[in-house]
Length: 368
Image 1 (cartoon, rainbow, N blue to C red):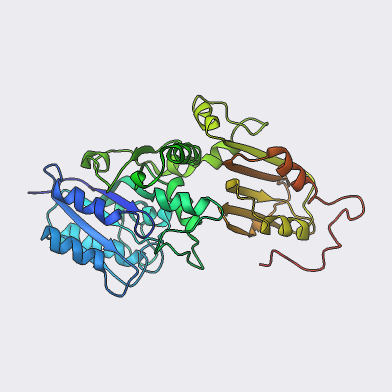
Image 2: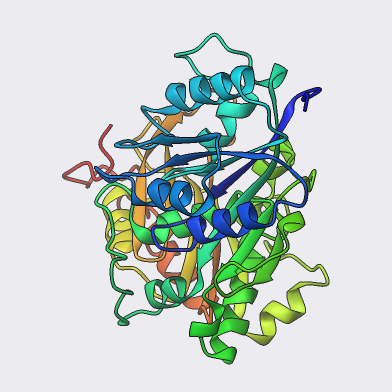
């Protein structure tokens, strides 16, 4: 068989144990007449997932990128292996299973922009067709339910906390599989579905057990659009909304039924750095996602805030330009949030008349 034109690619992401390999095997067992090549990436010394795929499918076109994460130091290796497959193998479709801690956007960029380590133009060989996220729905429930135990094996990584990995996977995908749905009570599942829709309204969502879906759900969907995908996370949509910060589309009613809401805060007055830092450290478990920029007194840097569950990151992401509108813009998405209280707490973190420039701060809580 001769392959004409760029080869379509589906990238499968998801946290460790979410069911990515189960999905890959399911697709390979019923590819719908397609000949599928697979690139597997795993963080372990021995890539058990790749061994299992090779053993169960006995197919050619399987490449194992072990001992690294394809979203960082192995991005060049991913592109080179994909190029080698495209030049030496005859197949209709490429499936890429990323590691459990990969960031989805850098992986997508491998197939849309290439890498600094390679002179290969990926768009001449490949067409990124679909970004699939396999969500461990049970793990999501436990991670975002304060006080609950995490599922066995789902321990947070110091650099990539579980909550952050889960939310980023939801926010950047075309197809979202809520896997292990059978392990979650129906009322909780409905609530999770509402939260997920608020975080990512564009993706096609399906509830699955053992990732049993029709392969056409994840292959040849034509759903990927990089620019649209980057704009689709719920927090960006809310920032683009009305001045009241609320989104009044038809999907909001279902979310409200499950206590899921969102709002935007905007302040022209700067934050006192120490007060803001103290507030960020005291995580409100009702807030699932917070994202935006902060105007902090006595700082020329823009302070970016990114919160996913109990994981909060805040620090400089650039400098204010002379003509910039220096003000805080933060989006909050959560369940049963007390919007009035959160707004009041944040207002209390702003500089006041006794300390108009925040000069009373004795330490810098947002170092470069």
